[in-house]
Image (cartoon, rainbow, N blue to C red):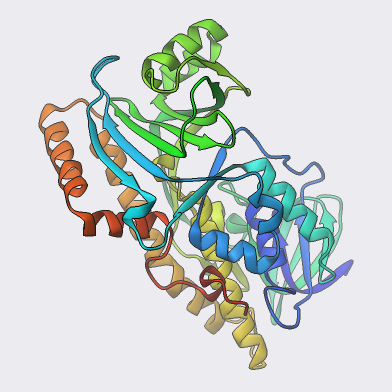
Length: 405
């Protein structure tokens, strides 16, 4: 064996890096030895912005990385939801402010590359983590351990294998875990804009027949655009000139931010739904996109991955302290029982909301508009909404409460 560890984590992206960090100080008292297997050319971040919930912030504070992120985040102060019926007809249906919930600021927006940089910086300080470069080529589970072989012939053995290698996870496939999946007839166009007028920390969500159009505030007079569009039209928009693209963008963004211009590259992401039929198999646990891929309309995907990591760490560390087998069936079943139902409910809700709002049916439009206007008039419902946005509902792991393990 080239490496023998307590835990082997496959995938060095955002979720894989966070999963590696949680098994050492300051997240826990005493460390488990971790090997992180990442691709030879790891990702550098992309144009997407992340919506970090309050619970994710608390976890990052425990991990010791929030200080490196905080100066680059834009706190969310308002959410404005409207129904787009044309350039001059965008009736506001719901407005929620951070004062509508006792938690104060419920979420923070930041570029994904900044979070990845902070995680990688922390990784270099983690004595319990050994970095390996390579890609999984073979996976074998034996009594008491899982063995991984990389494409360049390296061998790695661990008591627990964590799959953090994304939607097309080779680890999940090698473990024999099947998925429920389908493609949406939509793609998401992502870019960053600069605008003449300040956003005031407001996030705008506009529902168009093809899908939601979101303007998410970033630091300065900048906003991140997440533009869900019919897949064929999205492709044409990506191929259009910058002038033509901006004309379509301004039409959907409206005049409230003043003149806008592109401040980053245009990127496109085909949208899909995927849920693993199990979150664990022999010696293997799935986290992040290896376990679930949901529609981005609520901005919850990354935070769900952090919940996975926090819950798995808590279960594993508790069993390690009791001298139990951290990769055994009992440990993995507790993790699966904790996370799968919560994820299933969130995935189903986002899929339902996308189908409800991504259409031009007059009856459904009136129904959804009336529902949102009802929420707008009832403060307790707004409070519940903000608690969800802050990631404070459900059975929270300790890390997401701001408590070390």
